[in-house]
Image 1 (cartoon, one colour):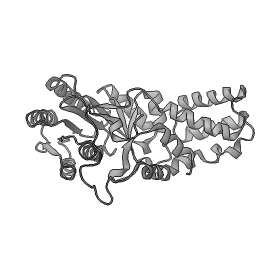
Image 2 (spheres, rainbow, N blue to C red; image 1 turned 90 degrees about the vertical axis):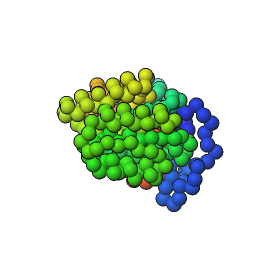
Image 3 (tube, helix red, strand yellow; image 1 turned 45 degrees about the vertical axis):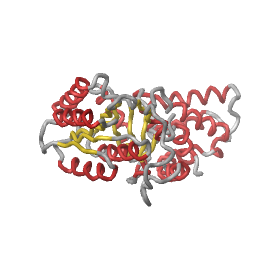
Image 4 (cartoon, rainbow, N blue to C red; image 1 turned 180 degrees about the vertical axis):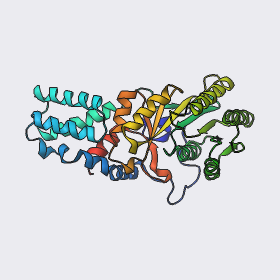
Length: 335
């Protein structure tokens, strides 16, 4: 699974030895070790939701009561009933066969199973096409536009790719303005239309511009919408058709942003978006503000779509490629 940006995004080119320029204090100039430390810190609420139930001292006896408490803790952390049942059943079987003999054994094995649960095929993003197109969709308030800006920054500064952003959210004027700030910060171009204009037309113009200017990646930001807003879902389908018609095989990646604080509601949103567009990956945001971090596992198992990016704060460095082993460690261990 991806740990660094060049492991998540496959460009077909040699990765840069270092960022093009120093991102400066407060930006993305932080190593993976620093992110891991903050990941643990920002997943404190999820870790507390699992609580003392997962401490080895609480499993002096691996009996029915112990596994019932474990099951309750996992469900409370929004791991989801089906995923929780599968994990607990596996642990019970291994305890019965003598593979697990202590609380320490159980905690170690639980960490392995959580990481295994979150690991799916297709966890990378193929950007070898020229231009490669990333379509970003999601509900209002999930951090979609910010995610677009941060991804553009990392693609340009970490991987050295030329990026063009399409501001296809023409209903919310602030979205285009927000992207304008991000585009300038990231050193990327922005194509936007007039407020209220046809989003599909904006996307078409952006793809035309990318082709004419030789840009390597186009990131399309779309308007936030609920699955109940059928006219907006139809519009999203239209945007996708325009992309596919203009560039065969595109969009090469469709990322759905999900607000982790919504827990199981986020999972239901993902299922409904998948009916309209071919969602290939999840950007799970706002993990720092929730006790429901287990939703990452439920999404992987119940939706069958890999979490590819996680957000644990507002800074550039707070959006990172998702690593299942790091995630499992962070929700079980203080340090």
